[in-house]
Image 1 (spheres, helix red, strand yellow):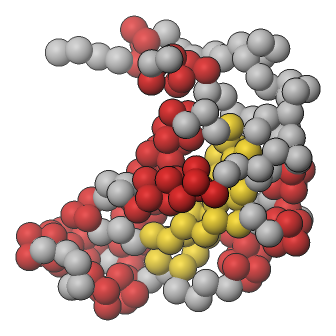
Image 2 (image 1 turned 90 degrees about the horizontal axis):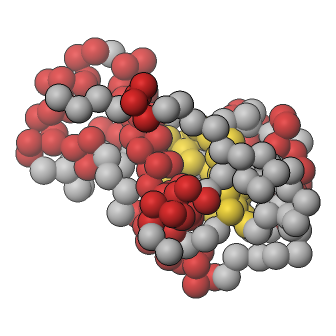
Length: 199
């Protein structure tokens, strides 16, 4: 099956099979893929927390709005986090950024202030989400991206002091009676002519 066919078959799972678990081999591959995610100037202002422990998933589920049951039933929840402040980023950037990257940050990002820096860092985390969801599709792992989480409560449970939770992704195997699967609820997208321009 081509990658395009796998993307066509991908959809956001609404109900998981709680008995099905993703193999450690596949989890390790997903970790390696996330580690290779692109970011502006190679900034990498992120952290990815893989959660399989049922007790922790159940704690997180209470702060997951409409995603509560998905968080409980999925194989793993991956929480995507961003550095909390520019200070944290600046303390580590010289360890891995080249001179061009440091100069870009110092002249084009930092002068815009703390809120701009936080926004810029958060955008990098969203780049990794695209890579991750594409990898899941290619590996035929079902997934559910979730912005519907209470970040502060997630942070308190995870207790990763330098990072703030941005969103999470549930992964696993869809339930046989998931009503969002494509045979029941066909995928709806805008016509490509409306959104893709060729000049």
